[in-house]
Length: 333
Ligand SMILES: Nc1ncnc2c1ncn2[C@@H]1O[C@H](COP(=O)(O)OP(=O)(O)OP(=O)(O)O)[C@@H](O)[C@H]1O
Ligand SMILES: [Mg+2]
Image 1 (cartoon, rainbow, N blue to C red):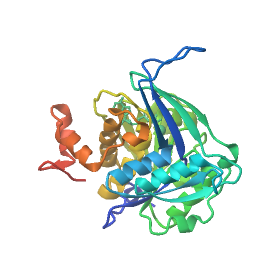
Image 2 (cartoon, rainbow, N blue to C red):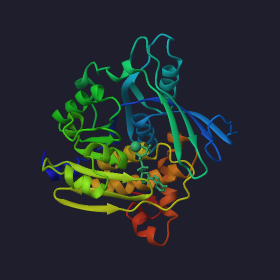
Image 3 (tube, rainbow, N blue to C red):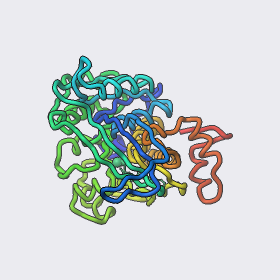
Image 4 (cartoon, rainbow, N blue to C red):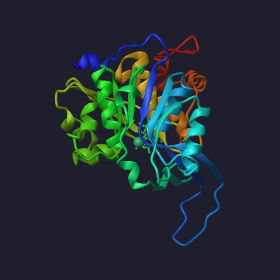
């Protein structure tokens, strides 16, 4: 696939149907003033128990923004053996997200305890059964049938890689959220047309601390679109020998949990709707900024109407940016 084809994904004539592949978690999220010291207790001023994980949060963002999201990934055992997995499935269904989950016997689904502090930072204790890491997708070709694009996280490479490869065989765009992958030659990475790293993920993959240098190092002429997010800092991108940066929106961040996941979901949707990687980064920055202003992890992802109101309220330096996506007070992509 050439650079132009990759960066300009074909625009489907209907709301994009995106398969989100990867991890599903039940997040217990506590809002605290400050992190407690060891052996001390602290009282949380807010609490939610919400579904999360990279691919799940991306799917929620896509569905709320008007896309058609499906989720595929491993979960704990069926038949009442894993109430966490049952809860994850029930919540996905109520978000309008269809699921192709592989229930793995004698395991429980991933769960996290998350502390979000007054500055919106998050600290996470995560539990995942090791048997889930080796679960394999049963029929990757079936999973990508009737789909316009794939979004994958890098938490279950064994499961996600064959699905992404099946999507590529059909000429579909594959967006990968890289948080920890450790090799530039990993088949999951090379299967993706759009490789969007977190700063930590880029550093783990390249061994390079500086994000701009890390992206340059990964450019290998295979036509992939590369980008790296860095919290409130600008998003850097490179494609076809060119590069640039996209500013984020200045917001009062009270909960950054899942900002990156929501960013990736919005990016995949905008890529399929607008066909342009850089434009999709700008759209995703707006969606993720709104998420950061609200407590509740990925469940705080905005709807399309909320995004429209946010963009239409912009002024000053952010107005040009917002006007790219609004016309007569309406959201256009
Ligand atoms: N404080 C913030 N203010 C505005 N936008 C933010 C802020 N934090 C994150 N974002 C938006 O979310 C995007 C992703 O954030 P970040 O780089 O922190 O993701 P991450 O490291 O993958 O973390 P996670 O996936 O755990 O949310 C950023 O590029 C930006 O658009
Ligand atoms: Mg992330």
